[in-house]
Length: 242
Image (tube, rainbow, N blue to C red):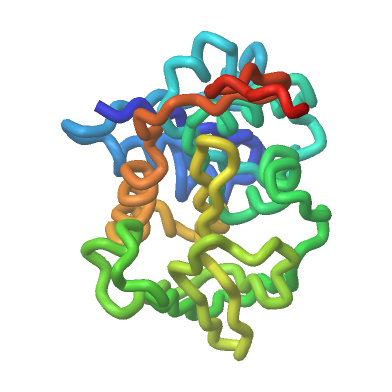
């Protein structure tokens, strides 16, 4: 059983009636409903909860953390960011969705600035092309996923060269975007997946949910031995040189 925590700042749904009508249970609620299955157990956490819902106990009991944020990146406490960062280095998987590219945790892990891309809200078609059909995150997906309406994100996307490029998006207005990228950080795996603007019902799309579920399985911790750092005793006897 993979233990997943879905974190959402949960502000759009409270403050914007349009978003509330699309996601009455919150974006986190929609994703949770789409992911719950025999292999994945889901809990949710939000910004307003004590410790943003990400206590040491919760994170230590989380295999994969899913992160959605937009309005309140700066309101996430630095101590919580450091806590999540250390858990990723220790093996917890992290899936960052849509505008989470500007979150403190994503920028800390990748070393990126806040302004990273072009954007536009114009109800555009998005076609998400599978670039690496052999990758487990793309399992069960055809050549592409087509979304009737989404927010546009366009290159240049100011991120380090990814370990793997899984998806590239094309938008009706002509832009393209690296919309599915993976990284390794310490013992942890990181997957960024672009679609999911709050004013569109993207997180009810079964193919989008399949990608996220695939990402959860891919990012789940593997049973590897933690590396050691600092001063180290020799494994073999060192002969004294005359």
